Length: 286
Image 1 (spheres, helix red, strand yellow):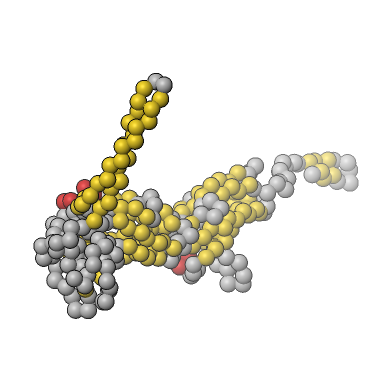
Image 2 (cartoon, rainbow, N blue to C red):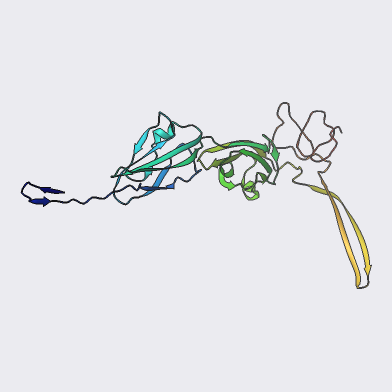
């Protein structure tokens, strides 16, 4: 800046300043796009850079006239009260930054809020079903688009991981259990942290002989002799049929309940008027 007077004297002074028209950059490290969260609000990590001084940082949840903005100075956690206002579904989080020159930038991420627990259905075993010394089979269904882990327990002993929805219970754990009622509990959680459980009461009775404890009553052996140049080979084919003996087993430790009927040979549950047992095949009207 210069200044002169009428007689030609000149003075000047100067000042330096920087022109900044470049907006700050903002990168969202977490949460990631499509991340799933439960009732607790997610934490966040953003990285900012600018040629000069970052002036302010803030974020918002959702869009619309009712959008609320939250200032922050360090990485942290999304405001819990604001997070609670959203129901199950997608949530849009927008982060903002401006610098001392007034340049502003923003970046956004969509996450999913999941506050619905998995739904578990136990197909087998059925309630009050009776089993002997062999661990029962199981089949379950679980409905959850964000399913994470599945496990079961027997009378609260251990948590056994389930990788397939059809299988057999742990024989080792089953053998350690006493006779009587057994509380079989299936549990599952999802990536949102929601946990659900469903149980069924079954019975262990070592006096029961059913399809898991066969008595071999006859064996046919067919021997075929195959002659060849190199010698004679013998092929043995064993045909084994398993069934319960036709003499009733000892009385089960479980009493028949009103309206329920059990086979006198293997103690499996039968229907009224049934002629043959579905499990052991014995005739019931003798």
